Image (cartoon, rainbow, N blue to C red):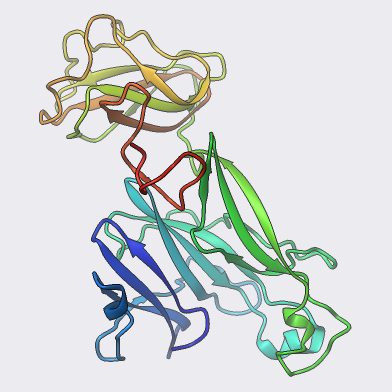
Length: 317
C-alpha cells in the first residue's frame, strides 16, 4: 500500500470502502478497491482480494505529464455518492525537488449510484490550483475528510493546498520546499449547487425519466431570475394527469434552496408506483435540484454528507 490510501463509508451498500493506491504498469498512480460491512475486515486485504478499480483516462489532460489518479475519496449526499478525484498533472518529483514548488494536483467531481461505478461527464477542475508564485494554493490541492458540510443554504468544502518554498532545494522530502507552507482553505457553494439546468431561450421544457417515489409533495432548489417555474405531471407516455397540468400549477418565482411547488386542487398522493414523469417549464434562471417527500418542511430524507449545524443521524429527516 502506498501513501494517500484512504477509506470512506458507502451507506448505499452499508459497507466500508478502502481506496487503495497502487502503481499500475500503464496508468501509474491508480486505485484498487476492497470493501466489507465490518470496518476492521475492510482493512484485511491482499493483492489477490482487492479489485483493480479507478485510474485517470484519456479525457484527463495532464499538463506536465500523463495525468494520474493521485487520490480518491467519496461521501454520500442526498440520493447518491459524490466522488472527489485528485488528479496529478505533474511534474515529476525531481523537478519539484529542484524548484522547491509543489506538484500540480486538482480536485474533480464524479457521482455514483452504487459506490463502485463512477460517472465523470465534466473534466473541469472543481477546485483548481493557482499556479502563481506566492499563491497559498500553488499545488497539491487535496480534499479533507468528509469532503463537505451542509451549513444552512450552503455547502462548506474544506481542502488543503501548498505554496512551496523555492528557498528550500533538497531531495530530502522531510525538508524539501515542495511540501512547505501548507494551508487549509474553505470553499462555499449553494446547497445542491454543483450543476444546474438553465433554459437557453424562453419557454424551455425539461422532462424527467419515468419516476417511482414515496411522498406527496414536490420541492425544488431554483433561482428563477424573475420568471415562473411550473411543473406538469404526466404518465409515462407524456399525457398530463388531470389536476396536475401546467395550467393547474401555482408555480414558483424566486430564489430558494427549498421551495414547494403546488397545484390548485391536487398533490402527488397515490402516484408513487405509477411511473410518472415531471415536465418543468422555465423561461430564465437555474433549476438545481428537485425531490419528492411527505415532509411539509421539505426534508428530503437523503444523506447529509459530513453533516452540519442542526443535522444529526446522517439523513435529512
